[in-house]
Length: 387
Image (cartoon, rainbow, N blue to C red; front, side, top):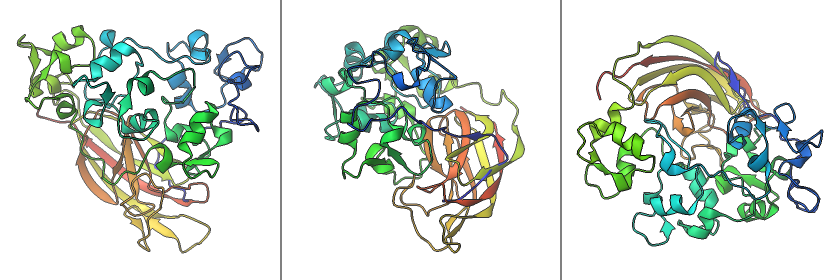
């Protein structure tokens, strides 16, 4: 409900126009006539979705382009196909919040530490949005069948923000191009659209603390054993500097980059448009870097001109019922690092980056199209100097 702008490039989701659910509730690309996923975008009917045929955001296209060749073809457009990256050949992106990319039986077994045939949150080392999406029966555990999926396209790899093309805080049927059954299962209140809460769940923390080492250390031994490592043997051996068969926290964190080996980023001003979900701050940070924010400006969050907010949040003290961070004031400044977040910032804050990745800024509001105004944020980054 506001327009906030940092002086940066904006990360915006363009409209998912004609590829949503049809009037009968069938996902286009899923009906009997369709031979491929996203068939409504295949303008020349060659069975390949070119980048200029894609009607969604760049981030959503990248999620679907499994081999990174710039087009969607083959398995990427086969109805019912899932990305099946071989987990035991994958490397680990040091200190980054990662999404699970392998939906195979071996990947499930690798994550199922206690071998009870289901994955609970303490066995899940990826983003919770994906966990909630895959947990179809909402029992706070992922069964083998839920993990492997079926021929039903459930859109598990695409985030809510990338689906919400018009930034109105809801995913309408016209923005959903996966199975109708999945949409209907997520639409718990049966109002014909998906709220952030229905898809992502509510976040009641500031999001500024993330300890990936502790997450991986399933047995709480203070080290990570090979059977607690969910990537390739080569990537584990590379980090096991003393060759004792386990990773200490220092070995794990060392691979995030040598402290102080990069100069502190120049302080810069970013304008945050309140109608944009995320604005690119053009800064890459590493876990452990110290980030400072000094923010100013005012935005209006609805057609009511008195419904204003500064970077610290709503001047009336109100909260938005479906905002990214529920317990903080509506309209306040929030951040995201890579796919991790949101993180509460407010008007002035110094925080230690919990993960590595690109920094983005936004406002803590649910419905953005009726917003007006912008925040100006001065961001500084000091490279970490210790492990």
